[in-house]
Length: 131
Image (cartoon, rainbow, N blue to C red; front, top):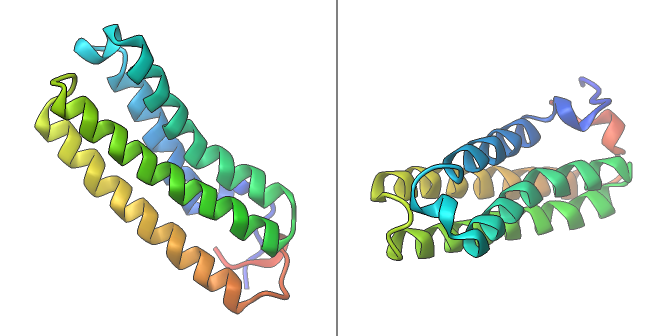
């Protein structure tokens, strides 16, 4: 079993961080860049996905990690909702919305799978999980 020493080694964290970077970049262009309220809320939701994964990992306790993974999954849903509203308000294109929707649904699925794994291995610590 490979040891994970840092949250940066987790694939789900890397994927969530990539979504955040992508959302920040997309929010700097087009009509979304001018709607400060929804733009900033979308950014916060995107950042919350990877931030909660990182925070939960650092507790070095599966129970806490699972709790923060659930927050992260919730933030992925929140971001999907906000992107739908941005699309409906014509702040982003359909293609952008559909691509993020697909990516975020996959992110939620991965987080759920990881939660299930941690629940089945409840006596391990975050420092000894498989990659």
